[in-house]
Length: 215
Image (cartoon, rainbow, N blue to C red; front, side, top):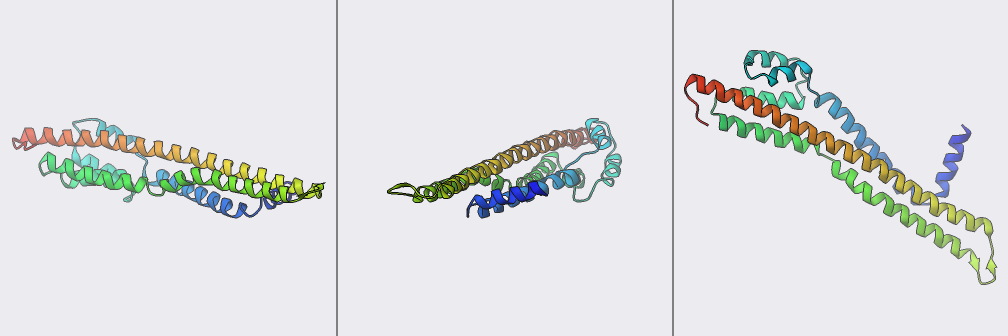
């Protein structure tokens, strides 16, 4: 309890810039939490489904059965369903529809990441503004006859340092979050592209066997 009280006092010493910095921190944490839930619920691929698609000779009915085990809002469910629903069409058509769906999925995965990237830049700048304000407050307490209020000067310096430290901390956490989820997005899209290629190749093999390959 004492630690919380001391932390609250330190935040109050940070000055008015603590308010926008706190807002940026809340936004960054909310976005990272949302992304974590999104990847956990909608961007995971079961080992059974992965092993099935990795084999070229699987039955389409087996894929449909595996898809029923996925959340209907899963990105892989959406992607594979597009391929399944168009597998009777020419391979080039199916590939084009799959690419369109992958683009929509990538847009969904990247949503609000730009906010994290903005916070990485904005938080240190707001901290710097707090630093400038704190130092100006400290210098105002120094009159022509020298130091007038040592306690006030110390408070101004504390305001400057606290604002800078909080701004840098928010930027660092946001940077790690942005890089982590950007990497997850790239990995998810690479995996989807690789598995999509497997499915399109399967379609082409089926069409060759049926004697109506059009791609």
